[in-house]
Image (cartoon, rainbow, N blue to C red; front, side, top):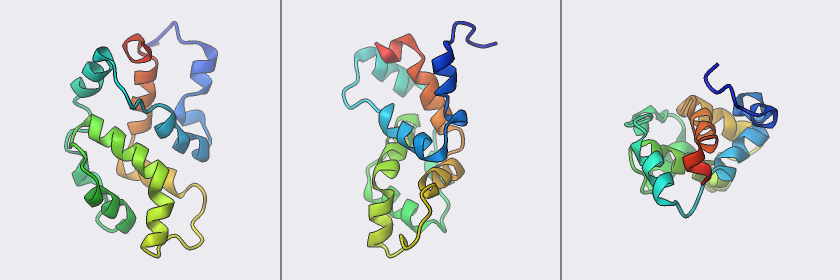
Length: 134
């Protein structure tokens, strides 16, 4: 077991066990606007998801539009920010692009899982790190 000291509530909050609508909210819930020195070091030291932009499917107009309209680093920190922004603004952008008609509620979670597989689990693992939770 990788983290033998994990609490039951932490285990039950793991994104893989959450329903899609709650998992989608995790991108926003785990985002920190003002990082401490330790949090910044942890976030920017992760080599996971470097070059993530090339994984955004070209046939996903809303995701591509959001990628092009933001100034995201091609690093884990940029992928995390993109995930947070997408979970917050996907539906607004979809309506603006006339692609939000009758979109099921789990659409954003599904799109993010496809474009950035495993990202929410990696973000969640940060929340268990004492350097992240400060």
